[in-house]
Length: 162
Image (cartoon, rainbow, N blue to C red; front, side, top):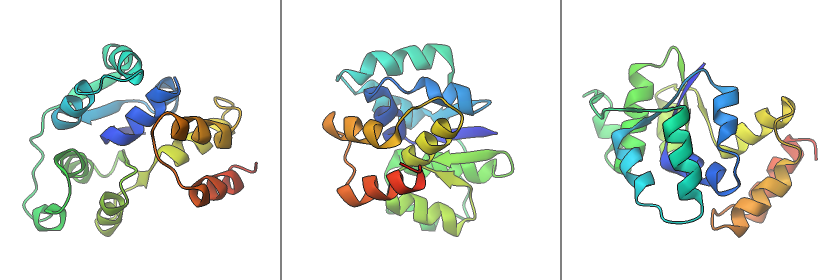
């Protein structure tokens, strides 16, 4: 299966040197040109990891997947979320949308798109032996500026069997 990612999960995984998990879990990893621009604006410790992933396995696609029938549903979202959802909608038979933004995920579900987020990726990675502890990884992400509430971390720990 292929994945189209929004900005957030790429940043979260890169902050903890786990971005390579995407290469292990998915056949192809796509980002829109808008998401690429958002990622290039990052100057934190994750910038080097993102740059390596872009050179290795992330494919940047053009933002030309506008589908008029879903445009009104997406009007309140940021550009990165919009373009990621549009690409997922245009390729819905063989793509998973990777997005943490709650509003974007809710809109994607209304469109019957397959979705997951950073936590879903980490749980899948743990089940495949690629990550030892989901909870510790989420706490590390939070410590590096990617926000997860205590309740979300607790729910993820339960789902991961920790």
